[in-house]
Image 1 (cartoon, rainbow, N blue to C red):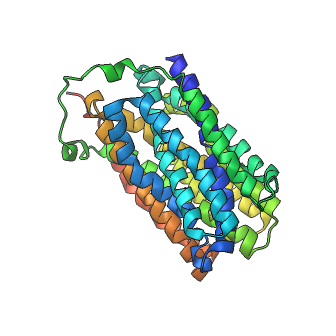
Image 2 (tube, rainbow, N blue to C red):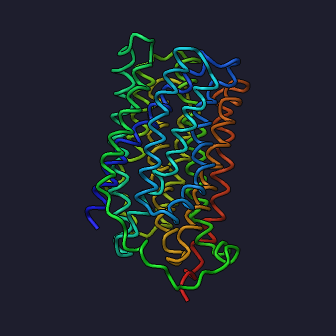
Image 3 (cartoon, helix red, strand yellow):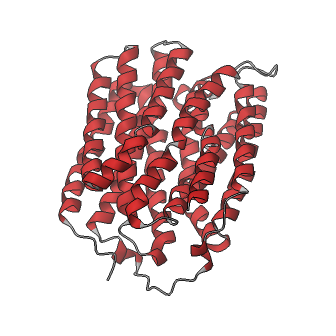
Length: 390
């Protein structure tokens, strides 16, 4: 149990460092390479599209070859992303830079499966705590990612930011070596004889609907606002690159640092109450961001955005694991991640267009209805009972 969790946490700390690098630099580099400013955030959006489109294939692959083989395969091909990005930056080929970020996102679909692999090794009462520990890897990634981007900005003579993407390949290689120590799960060696319900029947559960909606809305709104932030701060409002990096770094820290206690809170108060708190925190984020566009407004808004995402995502994931049978795990996990990251991809794709044509305040305004929509789903889920077991 502990070996699996330790290996996955260490591997995720390295592999996930690529995401904040792309979040920080994708829009900035995109603004210099894209044919139009409207496409500046396309590299970030395609990273999320990569996650969405790979969510189901990643789960299907692991259902056939096992978790370990799937994780190693993901790291192996993701190591090419940094090299492709380097070539794209040096030769100013925007479509290849987008391909590199797509590959990073595609590998994120495998990283998302880490959390399901981890909870398969623990009893139900340890699920929230296990998820919290695993998500702490994001704290390391939140710090190392932007720091790597800053300190390797001019590390290569080939050009600005080239060293940052060479570093992505290095991070993937480190994660691959760590995953070599991941043990094969006994759960994968046993063919479950438990009856599987039809997917439409599973999806009729109000609590499962809430679990998926919490993750999807949390990721969608977070991505919508976060994707626009570097461009709005650095390109539109002319905040320094260092200040922009600090805000993004702080945001990603706020996404994962609450995992120190959010698992404990879920164990004590339940997933649904924590989902409600996450919703409130995201509403606070929109209020602060709408007030002004000074450095501290961006910073506080992105802090609340990060913590709100943590509560929604961790609460939703914990609730999800309580509402399917072991034999149903792969298809429910795959559908859950596909829906979450499809909405996130749509949000990231639309973020740059809305920012370029209508401005920062419209980015915030479009985010609000999604949070309001979660309220009735939350109410119905709180009144329903778990029907996943006969």
